[in-house]
Length: 597
Image (cartoon, rainbow, N blue to C red; front, top):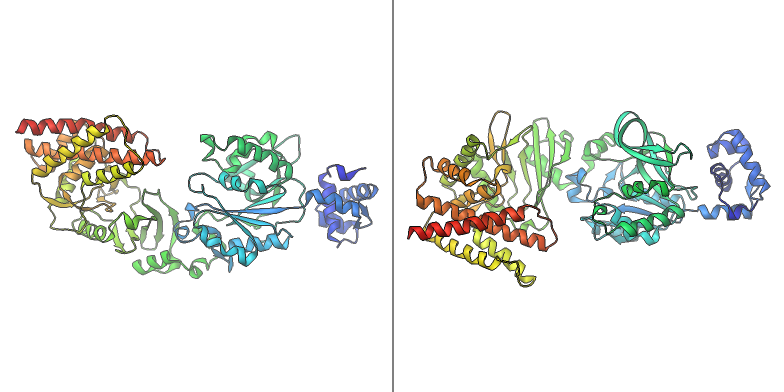
């Protein structure tokens, strides 16, 4: 029958692969081991024997040769991602290196692959990549670095190993299999799946009405459905076409944020992948700390984590009390997560990489202690002045301040006035003009600044700074990130001003300048804000001095936005917003000072 040049049917493959195991003594044994009915086992066995691929319950040389196209060649373990949903543990080490039920996740998976005869294993790393390097010596795997792990989704991981894709297992480093799912021979490309009874938010699989078990599409969410979970297998045909698609679409802007699965589903009609069904309790993917604790109740107690040590030491609680842990929206400089104990809800802030060069933590701590004592920030509990980690109270169902509501505008300005009147000083100084010049030096290091009108605007900023300094206004403790998103109002209408990283000694008008620009106040709203700040109508000298800081804040953040755009970051409409405030108020303030002479 020429089986060496033909594809085996699924049932013929199952029977042939079972015979290769060499432990079958009857048709019933064969059917049970192959996972098919007795009748199917009999028919497939007879056909294989007639083709010269089987003799009794043994394979012939031709049978072994017929299996070779189905041999698994290698495995790729994806371990490059940030695992942000597993904060705060992922702040310290990659999720795949966590120890669950006494075994490191990625190590257990490598061992299972090797037990199945898959010894050519590549681990693709990115985030905290150096933590994985030991696997080369310990397990004989290869390491490949994904340089784009932070800027692209996991399609970039497959891109760096596309030359390795053939008959390949594609795995995630953080999966846990209670039973080894890997095999030395596989019939066709497949995605592992588990059945969800009732509603689920998982990616639910739709199969073809014409071809048994072929994936025809996916719905995000569903009910009583098989959903995607765990490992995947690419056969050579799938790999060849997928790599062609990946190469053709990789540089398209819309591809960067896609999972590789989304790219596959975009072309599902031309990529033959089947569903491989697994019973519940075989495949575990842990998307949260509570999920892994449900699987391994002793996980936290056995976890070597400085983050959890910090939390327990600060709050005086046990690790076992910490639950409901999930990441919060990440800021530009820090990572934060929510957690709960029996005493309430909290936020743990983990300082971002390089922030030790940007933020004076000792000044931040002193400013926050002052804000707490003044009743301006009810969230602050503790911050390490050296390391920069912080524990704060979480405010559930809070809202941000609305700067365009006059009553709330007045409240913000009264907060600024109370802060500025406090008898508190810190070592850190803050100056909008100096900050803007620092950003300008970064631009100049990249080459000349040829943005039309830039140098004229910079000269106006210098002149406004000189005039504002000549006013002799007092320096005081200022927040310097003073805008509506840093005001949290709880259900009892209590207000907290948060995020004191840039607090320092500065001209009192700095906070007004930030607030006006970053809240996009109109001129009328800004003038009302000044009246609220002073508790009276401001003098002409006070008006021009404060608006000088609107101009300087706009110019500073405009230059910052130019730097970010030059570095490849997308600032969006804020570049124009900052530019507009700088352009408008630099000219207006210079006119006001000239008229005062």
